[in-house]
Amino acid sequence: MKTIYEACDLRSEVLEGELDDAIFAADFGHIVEGGGAEVYRNPHTFFKNTYPTSRLKKVVSHIFERLANSVEAGALVRLSTGYGGGKTHTLIALWHLAKNIADTTLGTELLPAAGRPSTVAVSTDHTDYENFLTFVQPHKIAMTYKLKD
Image 1 (tube, rainbow, N blue to C red):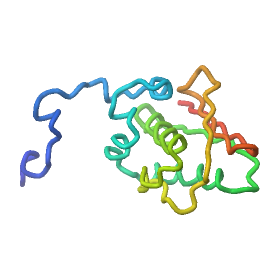
Image 2: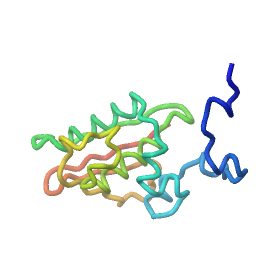
Image 3: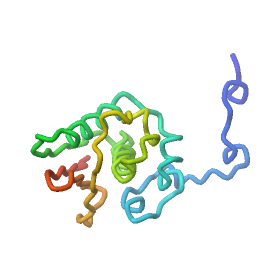
């Protein structure tokens, strides 16, 4: 059996002992406000490091299909998993895709370029970013996503 060093290409920050444990506790509010760790804040870095699980693909597809549907009346989606189940990571993925909807090279493993809505606005009116994320299809619908453990 191969060792981890033989089977994997370790990231430079791991090899150099510079891995900051704080990156394992993403704070969605910090990302919305333009802060947080680079690995979460920068959409290209985020998607480069995000494995497109079937559940993440399903949530992203569901939400953006509804946003692209011109007759959609709106929806409330509840993300409900245990601690460490990927709720915050999912919200960050949705945030980056919505904020950068015109960049069809971004997050294509989760949301193919074809069929994307042309515009998506994201409301950050809620002060509790960890619990609410609202997407608005301009002049039509608002979709609020409630995160609840």
